[in-house]
Length: 431
Image (cartoon, rainbow, N blue to C red):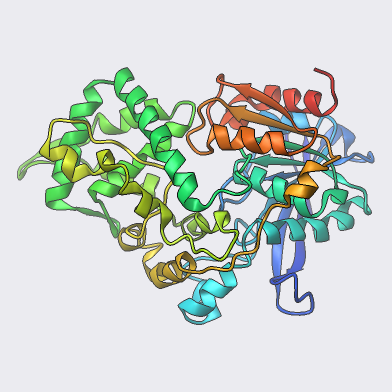
């Protein structure tokens, strides 16, 4: 273990060994990384533990600098574990460079089937007694981390003294088709709001889309396509995402000796926004996190999109309507345009056609829940359907919700200490 300091904090890097397959504890082992964080003034005290589960899937825990954002509030009373879920961050990596060590696409897909919330929770339950001496801990789950927290309540509530969820109450029984059938209308609302705020972006988006349809340039090996451009709509789910998207669009074109071209600045910004090099599991497992029965997810976002023809860029260009952005969806073409994903195209196909997924949530156990739970539900969350979230909230005994339109999906980042304060007050029955 390495311990070091940042302003006001003592941090300790911890490495844990866990089974790849928890049904075979004596089999292959992988490593999971966690960063312990404690206030410097309380480093020698016995404090309760809080484990943070990041959103995703596929993202390591946020790297803080000092006691910023919600972490500053948490370390006032907790010793915090920022967990890099399996396959992410400093845990045993799973990406285009490492997965070939498993063998071919079939072996890679079988390996990745062990990277869903059920395995993440079992990792937590192996790690917890090593840190707490067996005492239960508090879980803070953001987005997909909240999905993991609901799985935790379903499978190992004895390990929990409280659960805090921000923008992460999953449907307990929706198939991936249902998730995206609810998602596209939400995305359309976000796009309409963006265009109402920045009406000049309607024509800009049409011009960019038309250029990409004709030229399809490459930037550092990343092919820029109309569909890839549309996927920038994922930015609209954040608190300042609309403004970021507007500024990205405003310098799209530049005049050159060869005529009007897409600027290097724009192309690099799009490539950076669309690249999965740092989080390939997001693309590989994004639909698998919804699998709970014999049915494969089968590229649900792509299939369901056909039910919403207004999102087709070519159709929009033929008429005079706006080009609609998309977001929070993964499609087969992602594995054609992104060099970080191209080698994993067949692996992704095998995961998409895989059936027989283990059910993730125990509705009877959730209905009898005794763990204090509080959840921030964002009123028109682009990433997690509000109706699904509230239905799940009603199905978990004792869960208290804070429904707010003050924040978008990134409320924990934007609202920091206040969001955490509100959830702690709810689980403690102080409000």
